[in-house]
Image (cartoon, rainbow, N blue to C red; front, top):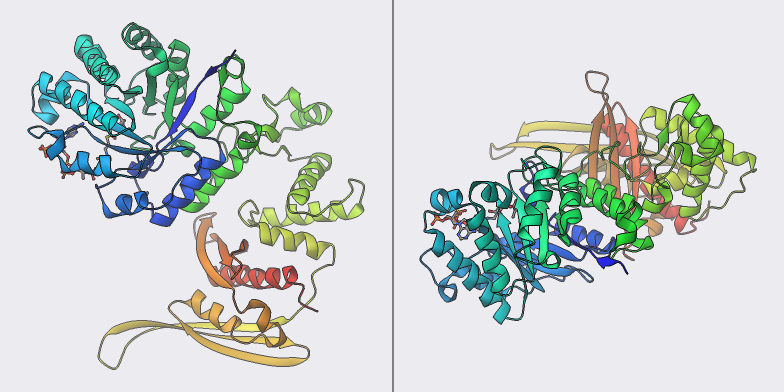
Length: 530
Ligand SMILES: CC(=O)SCCNC(=O)CCNC(=O)[C@H](O)C(C)(C)COP(=O)(O)OP(=O)(O)OC[C@H]1O[C@@H](n2cnc3c(N)ncnc32)[C@H](O)[C@@H]1OP(=O)(O)O
Ligand SMILES: CC(=O)C(=O)O
């Protein structure tokens, strides 16, 4: 009988402490939904009351499957729990669970809190008890537990025990500074288990030694049953334990897979790659190609000798089947391997081609040609769909953009304020007719977008409800010959969302290509006549 292991995600809280990352409310809602898709048990939403964004987020519907968890510190020194606004915000938050953070290193209690060791213990007991009385599932993150244990084991243990005895479901041992190594984690967890049962213990590891995943596994091996981490390892400084890696390892590798049951089943696991990359898309970051399990190179075979063996049996160079985590095998030097990949992609977007169909080779060649120019279709399904349909000769030539021009002018307006104006002109040929549209926009791409969609004659009614919802630019191949890749996300009245890509050394050109694909895709999907 396997034991239950719980995964706790703190992307929305510790992940929000990543340098350079600022989640919007929409980002937070989207990330909560991603976490639901991969079977996470607890989702920490943030710190209600700490800032308007987190407060607003707690007022929304955030997770449908995971236990939604509020985070905050134990009661402040010199205050009672009844008279502490921070505690009140936590107790009032619409959350299934509350995760408190408390100091468990005596040095921190003296230096950071400037209170007595006993006062800190009382704060832990009273805060946990107050949340428990309000019917919440309660956890306590013991900040700096491992450093604290090394400095003063009795006091670190007293903090853990205070929380457990006050009714905490989980006492989470944190390697806050990320400097602890797996052997130390295992040894200290073993000691703690003499005082708090392993089924009530969790681990929260930071990656400052590159050991966060290893430390989490060491802690589980030593008896803890909850792992805290983040999507793609986001988090303060070097990040937290990467839950994407951990989830795949726990579900697919032995002895973990046999010993433990996770909430995530095969379907959730199969979404892992898509969820990991969707997060990067949201953050406008290039996904780490070399990320374990989910990176684009995680199952890519380049060396000829490897490729030949992989063709005979993929297990020769793969530690797990990429399909389990929703990733793809890429045999970079083999048409055969490439064809399988393309067929899998085609099936995913609803196009079926027999493996002996000669058109499959043409699609493969076109994908390779485009990818060598910098196109990436992972985040641009609609452009990939059009690429295939164009090779198959199934995209009508609805209209031809004969030319466009954009002018950006910085000037003083009538009242003497400096202002930047963008104007675009687009010339389109449609049914032998020339149509010219001009528009102003708050920037060159906006002006082009408005001009292009201003008058498309008989096609106008098919795209009237189209709107752009996201625009991302990525520059690759640095220096003066830099190439830009533009990703555009569009939406229509029915709530359909689709993404297109354009690539060019010229950012306006790349944007225009992605805009055009967005329109043509909608015309194809709506069955607009040629
Ligand atoms: C290890 C971690 O990652 S813990 C999570 C850290 N995350 C965050 O801090 C992000 C959100 N935090 C915030 O927005 C703010 O810190 C707030 C709104 C919660 C509090 O803001 P402020 O009231 O201005 O306090 P400030 O940010 O300076 O926090 C330090 C205060 O908290 C006290 N404190 C810190 N940790 C704890 C704790 N676990 N229990 C009780 N008090 C604590 C300190 O003693 C200090 O009190 P003092 O001001 O009386 O000296
Ligand atoms: C709680 C937490 O984020 C830490 O100790 O690192």
